[in-house]
Image (cartoon, rainbow, N blue to C red; front, side, top):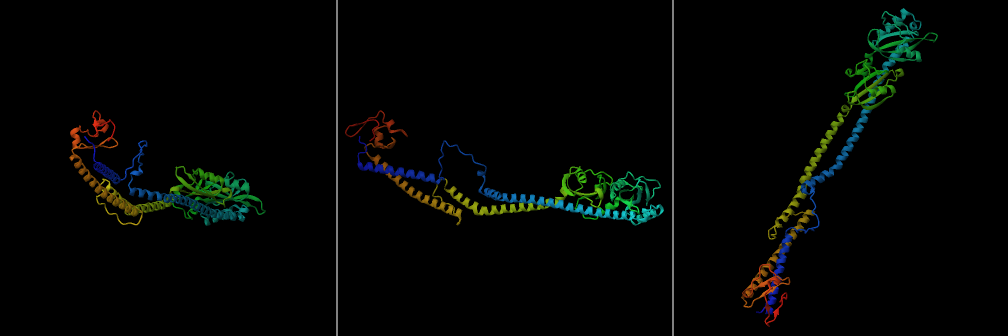
Length: 487
C-alpha cells in the first residue's frame, strides 16, 4: 500500500488544510472581537468586588457629581449662617444694652426730680428753723403739687421726725432707716431701699442733708417716692418684643417691673446673674439660663443719679424670641437653597440625559447588537455629534463596519476553503490507495475510504501514536515504518 505518492496531491492537500485552518482561526478571532473583547484574567489574581457606586447608572452618577459640586455651596451657606447668627446676637446685645441704659436714664430723671425737690425742702426757711406748724403746711403744699410721693418730711440728727406732710399721729424714729444712715455717713444725697410708708403704701426713700442758717449740718430731709412713679418711667421707652424690664434697689428687691406680670414689687430678685451684676454695679450684657431653665439674654446698668448704687435697671429676653426672626430668615434661605438645588438637579438630569446618557446608551445599544457575534446584523444609527461621545460613537461605528467587512471577507475565504476541502475529500476518497494524513501533533487529518478498508478507522480524537500500536506499516519498497516515525 502506498501513502501520498503523488507530489501534486500532497501539495494540494497541504494547501487545502492550511487555508481551512486559517479560515477557522480567523472566524474564531472575529467572534471573540465581536463579543466585546473579553479580557483573560490571571487565575492567581483575586477578583475585585464591585463597589456600591459601580451599581449606579450613569444618570445617578451625574446627580452625585452635581451634589458633590454643591457641597462647598452648603458649606459656605453654613458658615454664612453662623456668622449671621453671631452678628444678630451682637446686635441683640447692643439693642438690649441701649434699652436698659435708656430705662436707667428715665429712672435717673425721676431721681433728679426727687433730688431737686429735696434740695428745695432742705433750703426752706421753715425747715431750717424747724418751725413745726409752718413746715408741715409747706410740705403739704409740696405733696399736693407732686402726687408721686408717699410722704415728705424732715428728721433731726437724733432720728426723730420733726416735720412731715402726712402725720400718722405718733412719733417715728428714723435712726435705723437706710436713707438716714446714708446721709449721716456721707452728708450727701442718699437713696434708701424698698419699704412701706406710714400710709401703708410701698415706696423708696431719698434723703439730703439739712444745713442751718449758719451752715451747720442739722438734720435730714427725706421723700418717699411711690413705686408707681418708677413704673411709669419704665413704660417711657420702647422695648424688644418679649423683653422683661425691672428696677431693683441695692438689696435686689424689685421696685418696678414691665410687663407687670414679670415681677412683683417687694420680692427679691431670683436671677443669680442679675444679683452678681448688682454687686458689681457695672453696665453690661450676658447670656445665661434663668431659674426656669430658659436661655435668656440679659443687659443691666446702674442708675447713675442714685447715690451708692441705690437703683439698678435690668432687661432680659428669651434667646428663642430674639433669634426667631433670624431662624425664619434661615428657613427661608434654606428653602430657597434646597429649591435651587432641586431645580439644578432636575436641569442636570434633563441635560445629562440628553447630552451624556442617551449618546452613551446609543453606543451601548450598538455594542449589544453585535455582542452575540452576528456582525452582519445592521446596527442602530448613531446621532451626529461633535463632542467626545460623538467621536467615540463614530469610532465605534467605523470599528463595527471594519469588523463587518473583515467578517464578509473571512466568510468568503471560509466558504472557499470548505469547498476546497470537499473537493479534496472527493478526490481522496475516490482513490484506490489508502491515504492517511497526520499533523505534527499526531492528530489525524485524513483517513480516506481506501485506508478504512485496510485498517481499522481510528476513534474520535485518537492520536496516531495510540492508533499505530500493533500495526505494521510498510512503504512501496517493503520497508517497515517504525512506531513514532511519521510519513
